[in-house]
Length: 201
Image 1 (cartoon, rainbow, N blue to C red):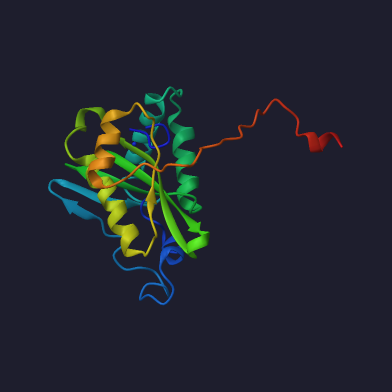
Image 2: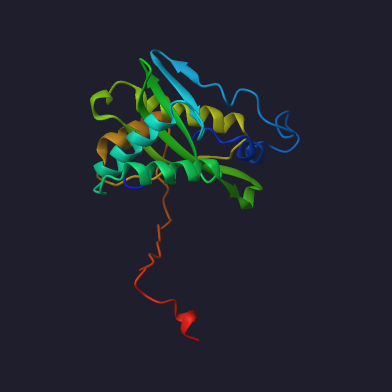
């Protein structure tokens, strides 16, 4: 599954401070418990930092995820990109581990909810290794995000997926996600071969 077209978190201590509601017990310093994953059956979901022992496994699976959606395999470039994103707090990641192997991952960003003067969490990527799908891993990863977002005082958790991704939509609906009506998703894609009009002034 891919949430942009549909498969880290843990916000790092800096992001976690941003996500904590003002005046809460967690708002003044690093949150205890964010570095401890929860165990759901035989699946353990753990926060993945750039220095985590399982990071290389997550990076390898992230490359598989990209290939699954039509991108060329680039293990080293993928690893470097993911390392930078996590290290610079652009995204956070969590991994589902079974029998000492990473079977799936999820990435999240925390963004301001301006009108509510709070924060919202956005699931960016969700992926489970093909041979381990339909075994509760995706659900465990999603519930991990929801549980921690709620604890951090976030106003909502959002994701997006393709309209024809029926299995993903069924899972998201089962967990409690609902479609958003009245909004349009707009993109402005940049062509690296075109010069910025401002550069010709």
